Image 1: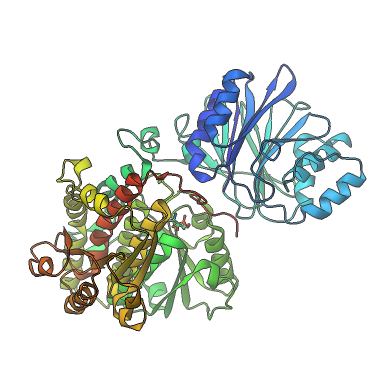
Image 2: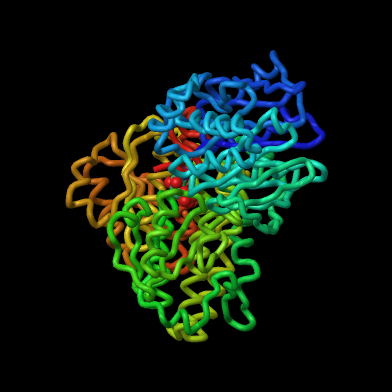
Length: 619
Ligand code: AGP
């Protein structure tokens, strides 16, 4: 989950690379470094700790030059310290490498290279790459050829970038497997390399993504693309529809807070151009699915991780309700190893904000190998998951920077709703009247989501969430309960709280309370209960009563106008009435805000929680 940035052009490289790393800090950070060619020599500055530590070093020991590389590290091999920070340099001091991923055969390569006289300075697996490149350069190969030969020797998934004083006008970058992306940014007389779009968005919106087993030779004039056999590739640029502002915080205190508030707008973008009220239908061109294809599918398996997996669990309800196709949901990390029952009549749907989650990508490859049709719901345009799918439904949520996923979750749910509608229409399981109602309901959603967020003081609301956070931020355990389509929301609400406040929080199907968890309930263990007016409301009320009977405090998420629940729960947060299929898109919002305000009261690092990274590209 490291961050990679490169620059070649006529401007000073250091500030551009440093600011790019700042935009990628959410990807992973325990050390950072920058290398620049300065007066024909490679100058390197590396520092353990947050990026600011590197910034202080650069201020006291500046480096100048118009070509450079930078890296933020999330340690996998070797402690977070200066010598293990990237960039890594070869024995001659003429080559530097930065990398995202793991060299799985690095021990054997270290042994081989040491036997040739190479001296290693770090504990990292990455360092073997720079000595391999050095070996081939010394044999007289060009920089790109030396990198290509080195790539043939290393095993595992990688994203790398290389710089050398031997050919000081070019960067060579490559992508092998799913260790995070490599994006080439196209400027005017300057070029950029990055592991993620926000790093270069303020300079250009024209980008080209490297696919697996591809490399690029980048100079100020442009880029040439090759496969690992040295064959030239023709690749066309994407235009990223995100403006530079959308990748920065603006007036918000944290990216997570900004992204919570962006959800009404994000949902409007997700639905935009896909719902045709007049003709009563849904458009999903990029799914590349004819009505006949849709009728040939007899099972859908949703694969995802973390928050995206919980979106998938809601998706099961949506697709089965509208399209009447059986849906299974599995974690990417489980699916890939369980020899799943998949064939050409199975559609495997990956849900992944980053499009680069290694477990989800591996599950997709397993599904492909077994002949399934492959779909993905993705936010990052042109990311690996989107590129290997037969059909894709973009979230159109805009860049999600906060490690805790919020708008990607709700826009995934909107995409799943549209997919259920699309499949239902194609398979004839929905009447025209039903379709009209379903479309009307979903188009009302952005406005209803805005009403929920208006309750928050930051938005001029009454401050219900700050008040609740003030009462509960010192608790060490929470239980989240939901039923039916809102059970996955209990799981998601618990994940939000635990991952940014470090409070232990557990999501549970409410009906399971009596089978164990109720033993946990006492005055120290608060319960969040999702109890909207739906088919399981009465059951939820009795669960709330069971908690109260054991002196447990209850925070209920309920339907606007429901006065009865306030006679049962200690606190009630109301959400507007909507169709039962769409309640998750509203009930999750109070849980996001509650987790956010609790984490802020606890002084937690909301956007960069400890041990976490935005895109998990290593197993
Ligand atoms: C969500 O808040 C977490 N940061 C994490 O669970 C995330 O959802 C998971 O890693 C999947 O990421 P993806 O959607 O990019 O595949």
